[in-house]
Image 1 (tube, rainbow, N blue to C red):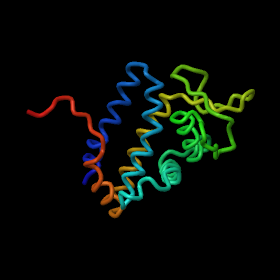
Image 2: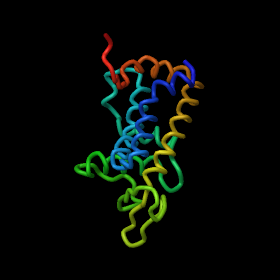
Image 3: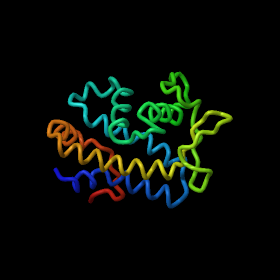
Image 4: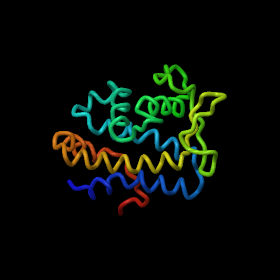
Length: 169
C-alpha cells in the first residue's frame, strides 16, 4: 500500500471537505471533521470486536499524535467532538481549559482565540478543516512506517464507507 492508495481510499473525506467549504456548509463540515479521528482510529484496531471499546482513548490518542496544538489538544478535540455530536448530553468534559467552544465560518474574529468573558475557545471551521487534512497526511506517513498498524488498516479499508454515485450494471 502506498500513500497514494491511502489518499484514494480517503478521497471521499477530502472531496466532501472541499464541497462543504465551497458551498459554505460549515456546520456540516464541522460534523465531518470531528468524525474523521473516529474513523481513522477504529481502522487501527486489530480485532473488530474491540472497536466499541476505548473509543474515547483511541480518539484522543489519534488527535494527540496527528492534530494537537498548544491551543487545541487531544482532550479538546474529544470535548469538541462530544459537544458537536452529542450536544454535551451525558458526556463529561475532560478538558478544563475552556468552558466550551464557539465554531465560526471563515472571516470571523480569528481562530483559536479565547473569549475572555465566556472562557470559550473560538474555532474557525475552515482552519480546522485545513488542519485535519494535514493530520490525515501525517497519519498516512505514520502508517507507512508501522507495518502492523498498516496491516490492520488495510484489512478494514474495504469496510470504509464509500460513495457510489452510479450503480454498476
